[in-house]
Length: 129
Image (cartoon, rainbow, N blue to C red; front, side, top):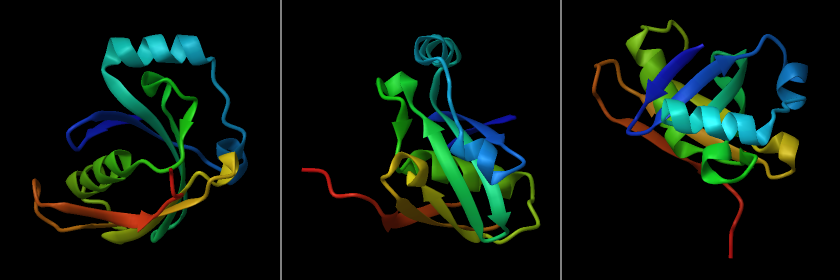
């Protein structure tokens, strides 16, 4: 469990298997209160498929919804966190998010080696009208 920020505070939690991620459930009002108390924007649950691929779910009770299908801010925060801990994986990776809620999104993330250096997040998400 770690906190990460790229302008907004996110709790980063890695799970050991994909099934745990797929079965994410939480008590909405309690988590919303905890997020407000801690100043969290999302709780980012992640499963690492490989050094180039992560699967993610982002609890977004602070925003009034159970889950966000594509969270660029959390992706940027994760990239900064991985860079800052000198993670030995890839500095370019994909995050698949929203699959388990039926709104699949693909976020492509890239970061450089220097602390404070820009992070790039781009990708494909659903169209909202």
